[in-house]
Length: 431
Image (cartoon, rainbow, N blue to C red; front, top):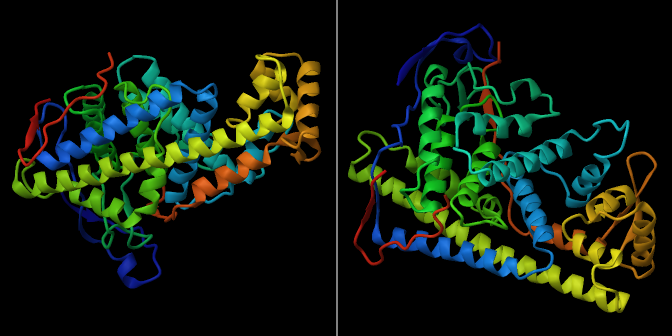
């Protein structure tokens, strides 16, 4: 859509201060549109769905499924934040997370708080999927509101932008930007269409998640936090469709490592001309192939990490010696992978045991070398499972983490897996 930028006089150069024409991209609606998947791409999507289901079946056999799910969700949120340039170490993040419960604490670590907001947003997306309520614009807004809660941009949380934003180029105008999303007047209608698409089960779940994410990033409906909200939307769809009832694959970890391919895939999704054209279908399929491959690789990474965590827990039990099943020590060992830094009060709440019994269990684990006493906040005693934190650090740092920047002008029933066609024959899905 051709538009004209009226300058407010700000800018370093004369070019920055000059008004001129620019083009914003307006995507076609998704709801009710048929999608054609090439035979090989349909097979890639089917492979990814089978892998995600296998991961969840394997997780169901673990005593600490919930702990593993929390760890993977945390790693996913960290990676998603890193894509946006928010970098924070695992130990630092976990200590700020442990300090959240303390009375009278101040929010001194802004970056860690933003990443914790991302964890809250992803958890909210999964809760929305579990609720079995329809996906609506309000669902998306609530995820975004949690994401920006407690940050300097909290006032924009859950609010659709009323200004033009853009990616790349000048900080003063969109005329040289790498990408300009649709004008703000069109955003509400596009979000309504996206919500209707997310609530449909016609496409395979992985393909639906890929298309929904790309469309969301194309709309770019918020002043900030678009990338992280869009990646939370992936998990909402995978959970809602029944592919990931227990654990979500850390897709952002892989997308972060393939940053150029990720950006290129989103760009190719934004075709010019008719959505039924050869170029548009080819761009869609290249994006779907990349996304499906990332899902499959994410499952492999999660499986490897799951094995390492299980080995650490087995080592703990050898050091501790025999313990009574469902004793406080037994439950604490199961819970530690998901909460590797905790206070006695947090552990007691988590286990549903008394403060006294929990304190004794923690002392036993300190003596055994499973836990180490640390300080969170100013002078609050906490305990950390060093081996889990080190494993988590290696896991989420093993992949590269690109950063990005978005300039904004100053704000004045579950379907389960589906079997897709294979070979070279295209598969058409009618919405």
